Length: 375
Image (tube, rainbow, N blue to C red; front, side, top):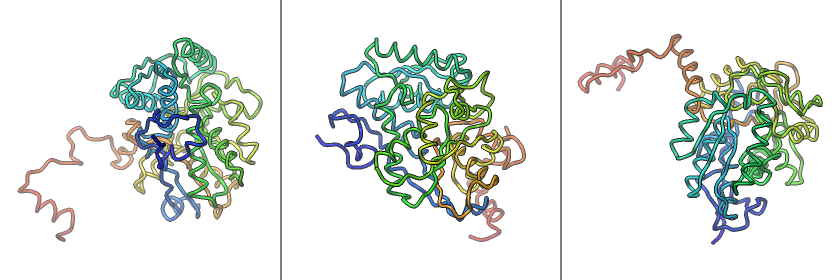
């Protein structure tokens, strides 16, 4: 049996799985890069802007890359499954790939993980339990993560905590994003990435480093109400004091899992961190939606960071840059409701007057109304 020649697994020689028969795939990887210079870029003054669409992965986020490698290792090593923490997307990916592998996924999520992501986990057979404090305060985040990693090892399970500190082999799946970007946008001088636990930033840096060629500057973008990347950059890897205040699902991390790798990615590439308010992230999400690109707020955070850099004079409008969209828009229904309200200048109406129900006989009249009498 041979490894697949498309998607993530075409890079199998750089991944830790050796047995092609162990591969678990749902079609992850080889996500598109879209030139949005003439649409989103023109709206904000960025003349060379590309979007890496990680929301197009099978489970709607880049976490599918991690889960694919993790469950291939589970099968290759005869493990009993995987156990991990999740703010939602990682858990949804773990549960889906567990089902594909004929294995199991046990997830301990944030107490306020959005309902749609919990449903994704349970719908495909994952087991989830919400834990107070995880993500929101640094001490609980670290304590629970360490406990789960130790318990997973004892139970013969893979520790699927999405950071190189806990799951370095599975996280090599993230490095394939850099391999793809090096092929798709070799001219890019900057890549903007959202930061939750720091694994995406760390993985993309390691991926470019694997290629031993010129690296673009990497910029990590976090909601201002999290701040764990800034804390790590300033020499506080233990995380922030107190609670996170951001409402951006997936980026509510008071302590980085990769508190060494993420700051190193910035230093090694000449990059920096950017903190943006939730309102700026929501505006970036709405801007992408205006041009047909529906991502969740975390998926728009990189764009918000690029816009902030442009406004602050840290980014030349002619510089070729990539922003990474990490999660699909359907994952956060509250954010969708905000987009709808902004479009309608009101909440979605219960009586559905905006999307009326009509009979077949009324279709010609409605066509005439909507199309101005044109066929």
